[in-house]
Length: 418
Image (cartoon, rainbow, N blue to C red; front, top):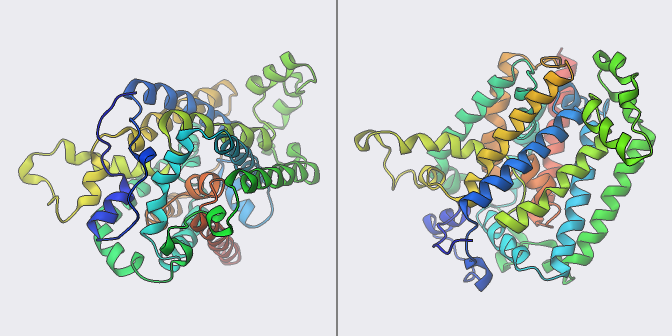
């Protein structure tokens, strides 16, 4: 760990820029930053696990995401429950054992709620995020696995996302004044951004209960909708081989994890949820993917001549993400290694390019909406759904239902229209 001053993250910058008032940060908010070598090494390993889990569960496929919103497939919900439940149990353990990293990451996430009204932030942003997911058949994290696995049109979703991040970066001041500063804030006005604070209960009690409920739901879905029934038809011959037996002994089970072209989605969810532990212990943050788009959309300011740069005072949001910092730039090696492992695994399974894309315009426009909405709502599918909900951030519990509502409405309209 290296001792250096921690520059403001996205939302603490906004607090200062837009004259918000919050309590003075506690001592744990000024903990030493993780070193760059440990950040890069950890995020690469995490990205490999992340990309493999998404690829093998086939949750990255547009048909899986759109199918979930139409309740025709349940792969996404199985991964979602598995990841949230595992993450909640791990965070409950960190809280119960009083690890300082847990208090630090809570402090890092508080400003996300303090800078957003409920309706204009998590509700509007969440609903638009869901609409973008249904249109593109992707989310900010899954699209990286889709690109690595050669899914047609996924590159257009990424391009649209980068444009969405750039536009939001340029208009962040306007979004703050016109939207995010408005509307009710509930308990966040009194510094109670987390549900356990509003309820006056220990975090680890509620988080442990949430973990048990989510994992129970995950197992129940696997029982009600057997995972093999949702494996893409193109993999039917491969699934009949002995490599997909997932035997009872550890050796054959591990062998199947690599050799079989598909996993039970619950296993993918458990693996993704387990990544909360290294994220919390090393980077002292939680899982997310949309920040990688914000960083890439802003990094160009580091290479332009001074006379061509946008005014720093007019576009401070861009410069926050353009400044290298472990708490935000860790997502770059994380998502990059997810692309690499999905590419390698799909080619090993002879399934590169097997998944059908969403089409150019749905992919591109959906990608734009995905990232713009993630920035507006203060989190993406992973940030709000897997991390914020597990951390009991109140606004995440508002954003996720809004996301599903937006996704379901868009998918139904899309289905009827086509």
